Image (cartoon, rainbow, N blue to C red; front, side, top):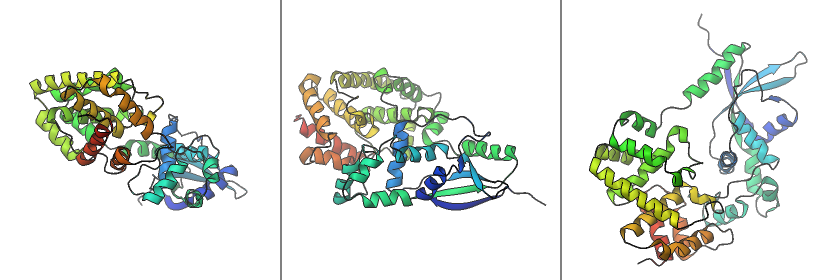
Length: 356
């Protein structure tokens, strides 16, 4: 008779999970649990962002263990970092994302409330008025649970191995890397991805999944095509095919890329104070602004003060968005990788800086 791994799916609210956690029902250090890197704070905050918006998150895998007295404890097989992020938010170790309000599905009333709680920890959110719905949403959020009923530790360990091996299919940039590995285009993209000025701004990108190279490809295609493009997988695939061995164009493109990075650097923007400038939405816009200035012979000294003021205003929690700031914000709230929204953001900051 064929044998199949025994498992069962169920649901658990965060409130129920936390009650169990306080009762010491979870073992986060099972012997077969491999050591894994602890999530960075921004990744934990992003999970909370998803939960408060009721976005789905991957299932949690647990192994129930019943003792002689009929008490059940659970080994955490997979999902340890997600559960730890939830606990850290509850006890005040991490805060909600500072960009919580930047989401296209929010209406104006919802965005105002979201702006009030952005960047705050759980206790601070509880103290805000009109946040009952968010508090209820958090505690009643449903976690998908997979129970694994297996006594053999090697079998359970193999589940963990399979989850981590099967859970990461090749993304489009990894496929491009395989297809275009010997081309002039990919070699240039890899070289530009090592640019010192850009590299320390890629902390949020999954470097191991080549997200930095995909983003640099988008910047390079702006130069080569002389226009903003949709950043859909299909468009990027097409551009890789077109420019894969366009040696002369790529040489010129590299020179222009270096000029634009030099221009960006000379603006002396405070990335430490305004960390969101390193988000690809804003970093692409800043690069496109500098691309516009380089191609229209506008000196950096002429705009650096205005650009700095723009981002100081834009990222301030006290800002009331209207005019150019609102145009930029609207274009940064939805379809951020579309050519039209990229253009809208670039032209909003051009207008703000009074660039002719």
